[in-house]
Image: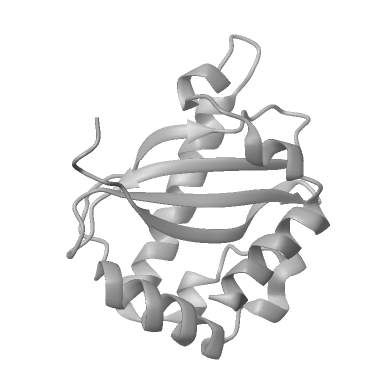
Length: 157
C-alpha cells in the first residue's frame, strides 16, 4: 500500500498535475468544439485496454508498455507482481468487461501536458470498478503514469 502512495505522489510531483487531482467533471465536459478531447479519450481507452490485456495475462511488459519513462524505475516485473497481481488481481480478478466507459476527466486540452481520466469497467470479482489513470505527454506522445482500480459501491446512487 505504501508503494502505491509513493507512485501516486511521485506522479503528482513530477508532472505538476496536483491541481488537476481536485478537478471534477465528465469526459463530455472536457470536449469542446475546438478541442480534440474525444480523440484523446479514445487513445487513453486503447492504452488502458492494452495495459489491461497485460494485466489479465500476467505480462508486465505488455502492461507497462505505454508507461512513461518518468516512472520507469517503478515498472519492473516485481512491481507488477506486488501491486497488480498481489493486490488488485486478488481483490478484483481479471478485467472482464468489453469496454471502458468514460466517467470523469480532469479535462484534456491540446496544450495540456497531464490529464486524469477515469473509466468504469467490469472485473471478475467486482462488476463496477473505477479504472483511474494519470497520463502525461513525453515529448509529443501521451504516456501512462499510473493506473489504479477502485471498487464502486453498488449500493449508493
